[in-house]
Image (tube, rainbow, N blue to C red; front, side):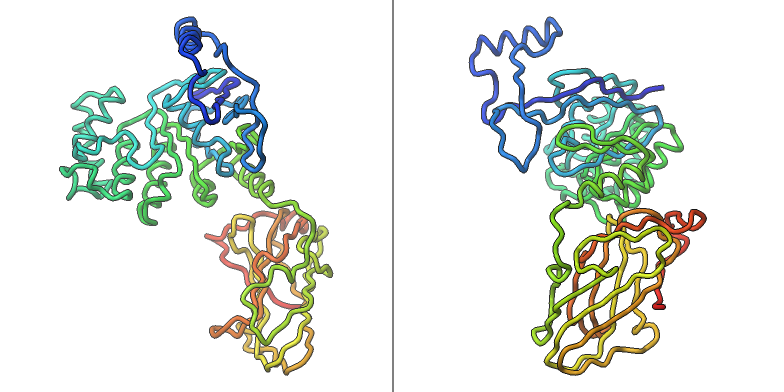
Amino acid sequence: MKAIEFNHVGKQYRLGVVSTGTFSHDLNRWWTMHVLGKEDPFLKIGDTNVRATKGECDFVWALKDINFSVEQGDVVGIIGKNGAGKSTLLKLLSRVTTPTVGEINVCGRIASLLEVGTGFHPEMTGRENIYMNGAIMGMTKAEITRKLDEIVDFSGCERYIDTPVKRYSSGMKVRLGFAVAAHLEPEILVVDEVLAVGDAEFQKKAIGKMQDVSKGQGRTVLFVSHNMAAVRSLCQKGVVLRDGMTDFIGSVDESINHYLESSTPHEEQKLMTDCIQECKSFLKISEIRINNTPYNSTTLAQGQEVLDVQIKGQTQEPMKCDLKLVIKKLDGTPMACFMEGRYKGCLYDIQPGKFTIDRHIRLPKYLAHGVYTIDLSLHEPFRQHFFQAPNCQTILIEGFYDQYAHPIKLSKEGFLGLESV
């Protein structure tokens, strides 16, 4: 059963001017759209919603031709860059505003948390706002009273529940707002990025509650966040928006990978030495080569098990240092780390002058096909960094033998330590 269905939905905004410009045209628009139920007669062809470019048209499509459906009980993550149309989509769904074209079919009652303090009256107390929100959702006073203690306990605002909401901090408003939205038994729960305001403890509790709402009670959840780890842990499916249009629809892992890979800048190759940060004044790095290339992107063929690393430079002072290399997923999750000197106690003893460091690092067969990034540095363990080059190379690993090439689960298999050949 479909809980939500978007049929060719679009939302157009006019830049700089609100309304058509004349009262007669405004009246004509209102009559056509709200009485006759037809499309906006003054709808103009507009630019795509691309923030980085300057368009020539005064009309912009914040959303254009959105087509997808959500089954009852699904937990769907809406992801994309800032300005991609995520919040606009949720506002249309919550009926904060109406679509310019198309229609949205919803089966069930919607509870929305789109921004801090959504639906709260600042002069009313937390308790009064709970009853008001429940009444807006069509619940009886008896239903709200039955849930009141559970809402207050979840929010952690019991001491302040009879204090006007205008005296709440932003975190307290989010806590109470989410508690109200999640506990008043909506068929559809819509949550925007507001959970980022809460502390780590509350975010964990909120995600757990959304999982209970979806899996235990069979309710539908739409979740917008830039925290890919939270989206991955909570959602089953993903919708990627780009410039106001649907870019990808699929499983949550496929959607996140598509979003992260499409967000990686496809610029001309540059040298890895351009990524060096926090380099000591007495040290100069002339060349870095990984996988026999000095550039910031490379590919490892299927079955290639060794990563060759070479650093050339010159120092004016002696250094006792260790090579550190970290392989990360595109969302920043570390997958494997090489710090052989720290583990074995053997450091490079580099004297003033030119030097070359060569290492051949054996890769784990657990790294599945995908795009990863590499952090590289020279450091004296627990004391100082001589230089750091974060995200110095993007590497496409084509995967090892099929029986080994599966994504690692950090919670079970841990953080891998790499060794040299």
